[in-house]
Amino acid sequence: MKFFIDTANLEQIKEAQALGVLDGVTTNPSLMAKEGIKGEKNIIQHYVDICNAVTGDVSAEVIATDYEGIIKEGEQLAKLHKQIVVKVPMIKDGIKAIKYFSNKGIKTNCTLVFTAGQALLAAKAGATYVSPFIGRLDDVAYDGVSLIAQIRLIYGNYGYKTQILAASIRHVMHIIQCAEVGADVATCPLSAILGLLKHPLTDSGLAQFLADYKKING
Ligand code: E4P
Image (cartoon, rainbow, N blue to C red):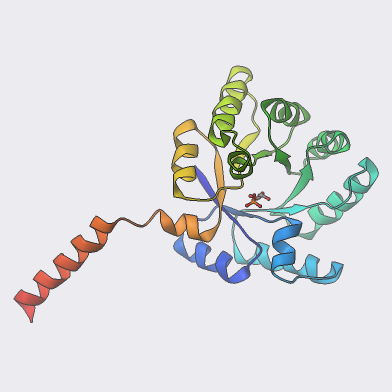
């Protein structure tokens, strides 16, 4: 399973990249706003800075919601850097635009996906990635991980190449469960990626090994 980091924070992106297990980055307008990135010029520069900090795909979301606007904005974003993936919302004009980008060889990430039907449409349009938001589904008492399993089954039935990018991940167990049901990618906050490292028996075992070494070697 690929690991993407779900943030626009450059320090966190660099920290995850330095771990050596990072495969890409996802951003969205809310994450950009959280970092205080304002104005078109700064936003564009920030995307380029993120691309230069990592080796994998970097999702940059369009703001337009009409077909022509999505195409114009998406083509501009795609020209910024070869790692840019154009993130397009799951709306009618978004699906049309994904089909257009797919025909042009521009990578896409279909975002704000909450049902298997939406994921099926995204795959038929040729999306590179589909982003089911599992945490937001859990928040409203639907099982987000079950949706990932459902999409995995459907894509397997027809051999769709669209990669399932589990998004809105909140914690370590989401990552493990997504791996169990076969998500291609998990996009996670840094805290969830680092959370995978942790177990109290690892900490106490290491403390014991170091203490015993000290006893013998002074
Ligand atoms: C990623 O592509 C999504 O924008 C993101 O995972 C949404 O996460 P949230 O539900 O924590 O905002």
